[in-house]
Image (cartoon, rainbow over all chains, first blue to last red; front, side, top):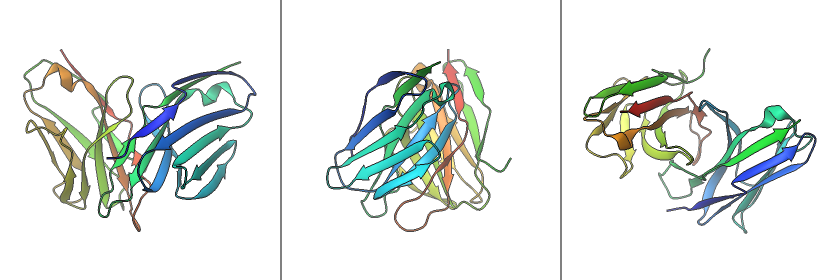
Length: 111
Length: 115
């Protein structure tokens, strides 16, 4: 079973700062997901990636398959970015589509 | 709104009662997933369906839990004889899977409180 670890658990940043959230996993994956969860529970899928780098607006996600590590970056952070960010791994075992989730990183961006 | 919907959004029940939650996936999506999230933790996989077939079940899904997707569209998750430990957010997700992995779209969740 994959073990997904995120760091830091909590992060407070000033508006405008560059933010990095890290995710590591223990066994091979077919894809890694970054999710955003706002207070109240709703989850939004930000990225799904299996190699390289993806960018959407101020968000950038990278993955290093050899090192079993992914990062989520937020440039020019804003208070509306305050949320819990969760990474989740799709194990590469044939026929298994379940996600293994990290515990999340709670981000607070202060004006 | 063509996203994943879940009903009810909140449910408060007394220990020992049965509860049923419903998930309506995005209409063309063939896969549907149920997850449970307790406070301060990431979601945990419970079960998933490909069309109407339930293909995987977690060991977390005790015999008090049952999930169905009778026509390959909406799904229900029933918990019988609820216990306080069942209090959690129950999340549903759907996807249109291609290849070996898929992008899952999550619903807003049903928050269950067992008193």
